[in-house]
Image (cartoon, rainbow over all chains, first blue to last red; front, side):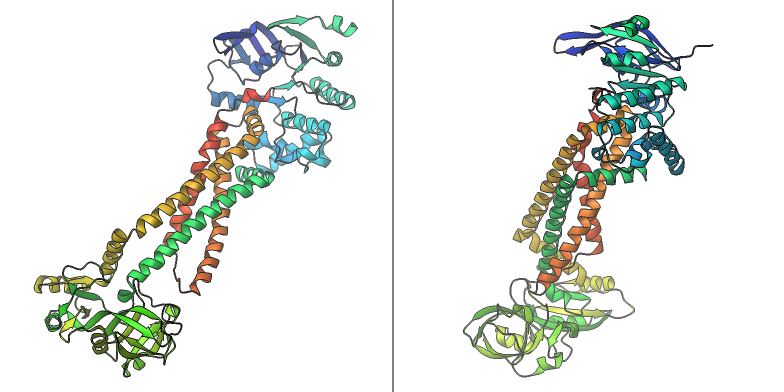
Amino acid sequence: MTTTIVAETKNASKSYKSGDTVILALKATSITINRGELVLLLGPSGSGKTTLLSLLGCVIYPTEGEVFLANQSINGLSDMELSDLRLKKIGFVFQNYNLVGPLSALENVLLPLQLQGIGRSESREKAISALALVGMADRMHQTPRKLSGGQQQRVAIARALVNNPSLILCDEPTASLDPKSVVYIMDRFRKLADDGRTMVIVTHDMRLVSYADRIYTVDNGHVKETDISNLKEN
Amino acid sequence: MFVLSTAIRFIRFDKAKSVGVTIGIIISTFLIGQQLGILNFLTGLMVTTAKNSDAQIWVIDESSTDINQLGRLDVRKLNEVRSIAGVKEAHPIVLAGGSATYQSGATASLLLVGSEGPRFPAGPRMSNIRKGSQVDLQQDLAISSDFFDTETLGGTTEPGTLLEINGKQAKITVQTNGVRGFGAPIAYTSIERARFYGNVPSTGINAVLVNVTDTFSVNQVTNNINGTLSGVRAWPVENLKESTISTVLASSGIAVSTGSLIVFALISGFFIIGLTLYSSALDRLQDYGTLKAIGAKNSYIRKLILTQAFLFAVVGFVIAYILLELFRKGVANTGLIFTLSPLTLLGMFVVIIAISMGSSAFALKRIKGVEPASVFR
């Protein structure tokens, strides 16, 4: 079977300035994310895993090295081009769901489609299908504050999926959820990966290991691939 | 459509802030409209005598630029004006000050406006008469008084009221409606009685009111008079009104006072609206950051904020306009009569849109600085 690389970093590093001090958040990192994989980025708080996710998500540029999305380097792209890339190629799921408060569940899911200028009826149809996929079609007219944490995360997943992106990035998607919701969400993610979607999940929750195809551990800015069988046995 | 519906959702979601912005716009618009209305009323008073005459041209002394401060002309100027090509008719008028004493003991200053009956070309017009008619001004001792000057004029302006003007007996026979002077209440009368009450010699007049023949334009006749006669100046009536208003505004401080109030209304509106929009944007920073993260460009965010500002301006303006109409109708009952022309309203609308959208710059600047990466926390 042919492996298709969806996202890749080559010696990518990221540093931030804090006053006169330069903080190296991510040291020369080379990883590949293949189509249909569910990849975990594991590590303690402040280890650099969110920085790596931000690079893969095209929301920041690497200080050194290169980041590729669908074989295209993001280094030379403008802010506008990066926005366009995020809109069309990436779906995001956030720790705090980040649904747009004033909008209903349906309107939140419609956002990526409408930002692309897709017609009203077509986008509505796609949004309702995405909500149905996560079991939220019956709550589509509710605003986020009327939904539980688990329900909000399901809507966020529908929003991330609705564009049919080549890469779905999740930042601690289960951190604010109860155990039952964690199982529901991770089962969904596993199924999405089995259906050919590519998912990268940042977490420090070891319960998620059993769902992963591959795992990178991040520690103090260093990234290395970890043998998954060892972790699953533990 | 998508931006519009999202903007409406944002407005409805944050009700307290939305009400705050709308109230800011209402207050600004109302204060500006109120000041412009009062200015319109005052400038109307400045030119009441010109507005209520039926002349196309006023011939006055050459040094005057204000219809309320006319110098004396010799009555022989009347025949000189009548001899000018294009003059269809010319009528003398006398403007004279008088001190009125009422039976109640109240006293008041009056501006006597005298012209020839039965037509009374200086006014009043039939449309401005509340009680009586122009014919009644031909009675002995007859003068007019305005209904809205009742309080100033000793408590009554009803026809039949007797009074003294400069110690000479007079009688109100006509009650006008909203014909009010700038410095003093106006009393229309015949030219002879204006001279009599105002102690003006029989050779004295203050202006000649001219109408032109069909074959000449107002400007042609004006030029003919100005090119032929010395010691006088002919003004098309609209030019004389404009000159009067600018002369009075420049010398009285009314323009500065009204202008500064309008400027303060604009400034306060700008900051009330701007800071409330800014505060609202701060509350929604995460939402704007999320929009950016999922691929919304800055241009979309800008449209979203500006659409909200535009909607606030439209809603606020409409409410303020309704309040202004209520205010206008309310004060009209007290004689403070003004109109806000469609052009003035359009100008106000444009200004309100501009301050509302301009003040959203605070919010736009803050939101522009939100990094999409900020949502990964």
